[in-house]
Amino acid sequence: MFLEICDLFVFWDLLFRICRSYGIILPMISLDKKLKLSDFHYDLPESLIAQQPIPVRDQSKLMVVGRETGIIEHGIFSDLGRYLVPGDLLVVNNTKVCSCRIPAKKSGGGKAEIFLLAEQERNCWTALVKGTSGKGKKLIIKQGIEAEILKEHEDMIRNIRFHGIHDIRDVLSTIGQVPLPPYIKRDPTTEDCERYQTVYASDEGAVAAPTAGLHFTSALIQRLLGKGIEFCTITLHVGLGTFQPVRVDTVSDHKMLPEQYTVTSEAASAMNKAHKEGRRVIAVGTTSVRTIETAADDQGMVHPGTGDSELFIYPGYQFKVTNGIITNFHLPNTTLLMLISAFGGRERMLSAYKTAIEQEYRFYSYGDAMLILS
Image (tube, rainbow, N blue to C red; front, side, top):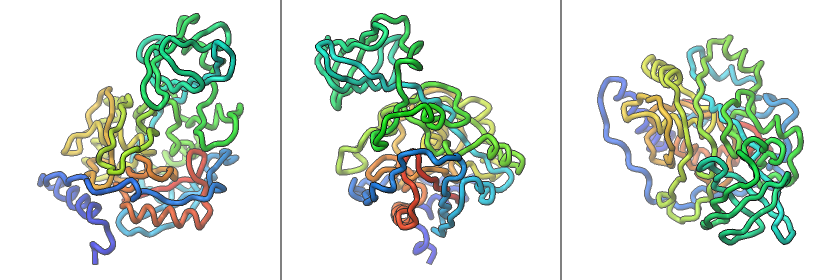
């Protein structure tokens, strides 16, 4: 009966954590090599793709899914504290989105666009370039600034160098735009400059928001702290690795691109203390999950440091630290949906998404939230 309720890998995760608490080390479970990209498909009415942020951040809907039971509850994000207990540790990603979408013009006229992905060195970036191609080609930007294509890669990814400016970062706030996802069918507004950042964003370097955190307000955080809920902060600068499309039929063949993360000694100590005391470590967003799991060893000890995460989490992955996830509703056939399927069970997550569609939840970056909790 238990296995009828829980997916097999969830059962093994529970067994692993119980055994680890008694010092018994089990072999790691093999990732599911048979999964196909089509196993993570679902159909979503376009009307449910949120085009605007909700007027008040914490008034979004919240779907709560029991990781072991599959029981679903419906609430409002401001009531998050109802589902948490004193001692729960929320791990938030403090990365800040930079204005990395730069309108440009081709030297002969015509529109082009530069979408910055990662800085290689001062004024040299990896970027998505739309509107032109060819090594040596230059794009004209406002204020006499030019960008030169140094090298071309597939999928419009280019290495570029900026000319006419000491450091392009110094003027991004004036020449760049908020990098709203392509499924938001409108131009960014001044409201997006504030709403496409978490209230705790502080470390600039992301090209997309860690959207699970968009639901928090400062007042909600204070209420949770007053209830005895703890917070710690990590950083993962969201880049191409997070939203890179999966272009292989067999899921295990996909390779994640690196994204830079930092775990401070304070954050590592907080997670290790919670883990040792049997308290829940709840990741706010898939980026927090990947950071935690990248920085942890096989015994569940989180180590401080800075590095690149290329961790690809999909069903069969053995979670070492994470006991809960706060997340948004993700696009089909993406590594984000695969990650939450690894944690909550693929069939259970697809069933929850079906319920969300029936209940007209709002999807994607500006959409509603889900809490998957052990």
